[in-house]
Image 1 (cartoon, rainbow, N blue to C red):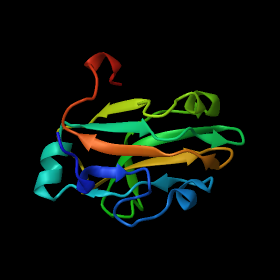
Image 2 (cartoon, rainbow, N blue to C red; image 1 turned 90 degrees about the vertical axis):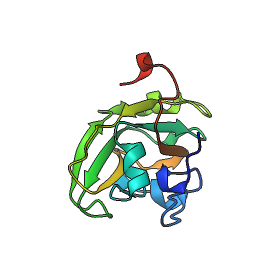
Image 3 (cartoon, rainbow, N blue to C red; image 1 turned 120 degrees about the horizontal axis):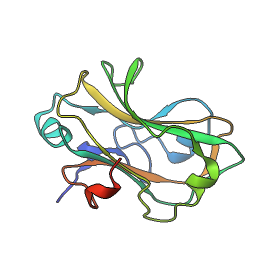
Length: 152
């Protein structure tokens, strides 16, 4: 299986569509988004519809305190201005997120067969304090990287 840049929402170095670096993506306590994927592009739509979004840890997360929430959303705008949340992790305590090590996969999310809006992205919200370290790959794949038992 090959996943190219058009199916990455986030790569270790930053967002593939605009080259925004990790340091500036994590260093805030407001909603942050990955690059968005245009679902009207035929190849993207075919893999995304019924595929999976995989969240894979690169380097361990660090945060002064608090928790975070992770989402998958769609929007009519590439900037995700007004999003519709398709999936949410709910509140994740920092200690839980920090326990994941290199190449750990905290979430694999099954995508729907049809999307109500044009752009797809993942997002995060550190609810108390900004992340001070940590990296993550977030990408779409047609197959789950492990059995259905682990899929939420």
